Image (tube, rainbow, N blue to C red):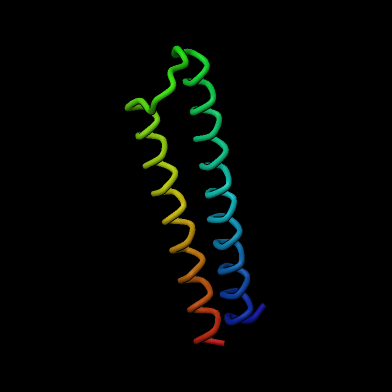
Length: 79
């Protein structure tokens, strides 16, 4: 393969890797949230652990949006 084709393949592999990593993080955080919620008593208000998980989800969403925006920006501007 030529250098340009190898670079394209490597970029695709990295994109797939980061996408899978993001999905895995969402699933892991969801599993952790559900597991912890099953071990604490149910209350009608938010607890500190609820706020912690909400902030974790927001940071995870922000990182996935950042990756998507940068990927789209580089794809549009350099192709």
